Image (cartoon, rainbow, N blue to C red; front, side, top):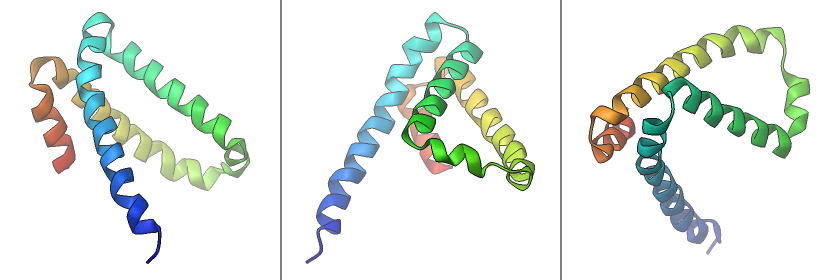
Length: 102
């Protein structure tokens, strides 16, 4: 038997726990600061961590990638903004479920 299936289930459960916990942790955070500041901080930290982990990816960015990536990133950003705006006025577990269903 391969080791991959033995690792896959705990990894999937771990990701689900961290992902679900993020909704619980985000709600008080966005109550203490403006939503756009929260999202800017969140994604700036994520970008820096990803660049630290794999800096060579910056050399692969080109014009064609930006033509596709910028519009897709804008749509994703609008989705995150909408979701974060709705978080304080909805139940946290429902927001996580709705995001999962998309």
